[in-house]
Length: 97
Image (cartoon, rainbow, N blue to C red; front, side, top):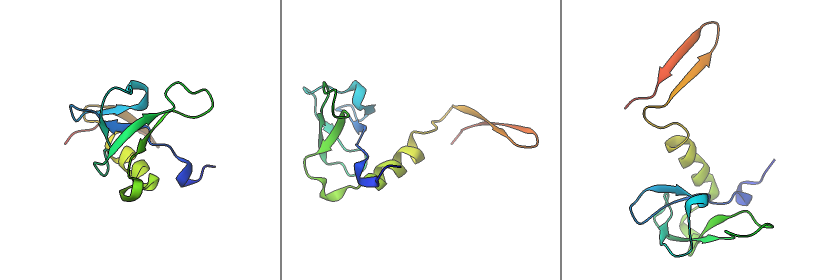
């Protein structure tokens, strides 16, 4: 089990205001936290010992608890995705707004 403060920030907004993951980042672009809007920088992109992540320049406005909640609320399922719920009978659901 992980501690909430050990979770690394794995996503951010790019210059086009799109959500990207750390795997799509490079050191030459500017990124902002999707939660608090503060500037973040990609860290450990080439490390084999440290998990790549974004780091806040000023982390005082954000917590990893907010990050996990935001990700599940906004990115776990996106508009147009479909999923199946298995109970006594199958229920097919398509996510819409």
